[in-house]
Image 1 (tube, rainbow, N blue to C red):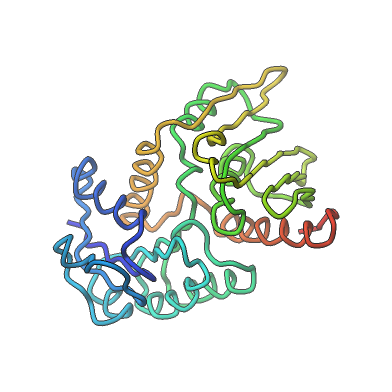
Image 2 (cartoon, rainbow, N blue to C red):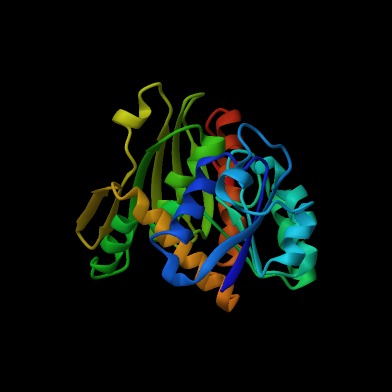
Length: 282
């Protein structure tokens, strides 16, 4: 059995609950279990007691006593570097939830730490593995030449999910970008090194979960393939399957370059918008 350790800012969050329920339930045949956990800033009920998961004395102890580690903190990406500094010296294969860091400098520090200590690294939004997107790409009949993705939420914490669908379709080798959105809307254009483009639309509103579903379109030849993401358990399950495979092999389905590019894109969009909607070279 593969022993997974959770390291988090606060364990009472949707990702910790979802990943645990999948690994111990529908995906139990993967023979991977959460056997230890630790959180830096506990909130609410005792998550470890509620889920019968032993609580470690520190993040470093989780890494020492587990086979592999998940650094979660999905609502506190700013804590990833500090948590990784505690975890990565153990040299264990490590998943970092959603994206590496809030800025490129810290993302590079995490990669350097992982390299120094021989810890394989995997970081991605689960939406990169959306069932509908994978099905569309499988049946596309060719290489997508452009794409659009739409979704909801605040760009800094949630925009990565909509971005991840574009990256899943076209890759992350973005040359430059421009964001002409405003405080509650991102209207981002990505230009790739080979001239392809992707358009990413992320909006926040009180009723966003009702009216702004995740959706995408990929152009292959003269046709567009479009779909709305509806299978939420499916993309979380796909991420966990990818994670367990990574843990067992040390081979990430997402390259280090892509992990760093995603952070650069998120950061670059903020810079473009702050500068009045200018093209930003990456």
